[in-house]
Image 1 (cartoon, protein in one colour):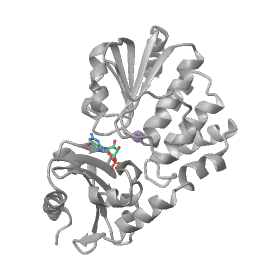
Image 2: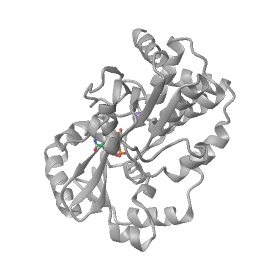
Image 3: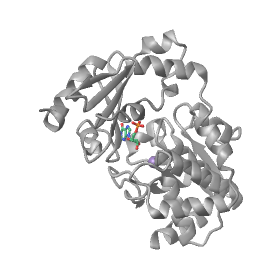
Length: 321
Ligand code: 5GP
Ligand code: MN
């Protein structure tokens, strides 16, 4: 695998390395950042890891203090910038500036909408997660994967495959996970931290959001909304909202599910999920977003209601009678 040689040769030739991923971190972005950080620290590289946005509560326990920085001072230059799990520069948010301050950029990613913006693009949209892609690179180069690194890869894979239920879960994915388990990772403890640790407040808020789901097109489209007022009332952050759009997809009739999150009165974040063959990344792309076939998103400069009507209009040709 040429990619693996390129990847590790560039690491070898760099002293100062920066790791970044997309804003508003998820399991795969954090898992792959932490995994690679662990490796680079082990081989004595100087590493900075940047994340824009709040770390979701269920990942906090996996991250030791000071591992992640949330602000970049604009002065520091890097020999190598490695962008993980991020398909385009704009998704880097405030850290897209680091691109201009780096001699070389490598992107390791699995988004079908990846724009090949880096100097070296190691992109495989058929693979479950960026964590699995890193696993493959390490195996191809015969590099040791420690137990700690294995834990982080496992977090990437289990979260991006929806606990091994999405169609991106391949035989290779299961084989990789088999190897990770054999390295001694404690899957019960990791899974409990990831999935059985919801604060009561978050569950109550979830129920409130779910109780207002609307259905359209013969129940084939289900949509929920989160307003700033609701967050204020429940003393919650938008980052605490998780799993709603996947929950709506669990409904038998639903083919496409959606959640609209109000950022402010004129800006929303939309998440789309599909169950079968409808490619929601195509829909997201028409609004400047992206993602995967069955999970995609975009930001839109309209109110919640206007956005909902816009999406309903777009879906009419796909789901309408
Ligand atoms: P989520 O809906 O959970 O935010 O994201 C689902 C998938 O779509 C993820 O793979 C995420 O990276 C991608 N995605 C979400 N929002 C955007 C966006 O605004 N732009 C792009 N390019 N991808 C997005
Ligand atoms: Mn991912």
